[in-house]
Length: 507
Image (cartoon, rainbow, N blue to C red; front, side):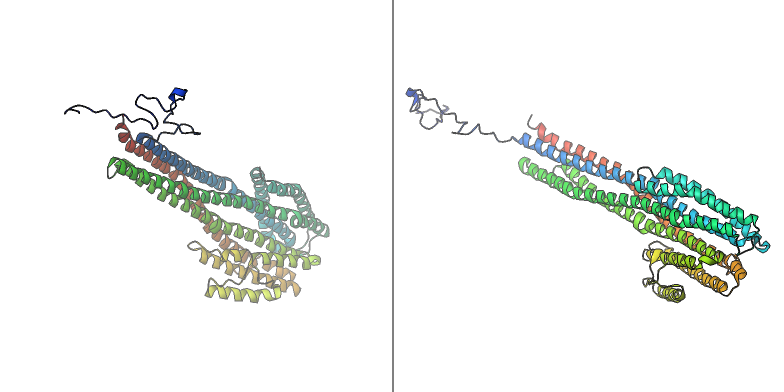
């Protein structure tokens, strides 16, 4: 019997072992069983201790945070790189190619005008203006061609188009120069060019329309497609970053909340302030990162679709109007090819503003009806072509009014063309030339210049909107990088500060 204060030691023996420690088969040499082993299995793994669990939870949260920071940093730097490519290379390449197209079309128009004016003293001022503009266009075309050559590195389609332009540009200038020189030496009267000069010019304009202008158009398209590809790639990258933001961000917040709950249960503390602050900081990060990705997508869409699609359409329209003006001059100049040049004018007009294939006889009536409809209801757009693209993409303040002014100016220019053709048809060639080249109010060239000025203002509205969106997008990408990395770093510090005191309790 034990007395008060004595300790009773109770020894728990494995089953089948007697008091001496020998098992039932000890006399037969059998070894006692290891309680840490079971037949046919390895050693049983000991359960994780509380400090180990806390360390694993902390490491998991930190890993998710680092991965999230990497995704956001990649999205920010990727967006900044895309804006640099677009703003510094791809958009200027489209603009340069469009300027080359414009210079080439006007170059041929001014060559035709010089031949048309001839040696008529009454048109000497017009002749001098055409000569000066021809020189300017030639200089601009050479500069634009040099710049386009520099831009084309790495773009196979652009290089192919440039090769065709380079191959034909020198021959065109030689042919046009011989035509102008022959006509000058012949003292040819207005509207009656020297036959030899006309033969040289026909070769020049055929080369322009058959090779140079199609190649210039292909150059614009190749550069525009490169811009479109960058836009598509970056939109895809932002969408992918958004998906990872949801997955990693959701997993991180869930892990932080789970750790917080576990700490509350295990340590009987209602809240861990540092972990709670880290969770809040990550929640704020997810919200701001989501807003950043949405903002970048919107800036990209504004820059490319709302603004630059219109810039491309309107730039193409401007060059095509210049080509139609050249076709009009050729029509007056070359009696034997009037049917061909009128067909060229109709083709150009249809590219600019199409009206269900309406030819010249019905075009003005159809155009008047379409103009009246869109005046009454801006959504009632009954025409296609480049102007149809623009009217379906009215986005920015003042753009609608500028587009309407351009449309009305185009209508006035079209009406002038019909008057010129009527004068030619009635045999009043000198009056047709005078009206075709008149800069007086209501004259054809005056209306052409008015339309060109209205069109350039419309292009400027979209160009400025593109610059504004691209500048904003690049700035947001720069700011987001440092804000997001700062939030991740701060949250990691708070995470470490939250678990460190709990780990100290086990030392």
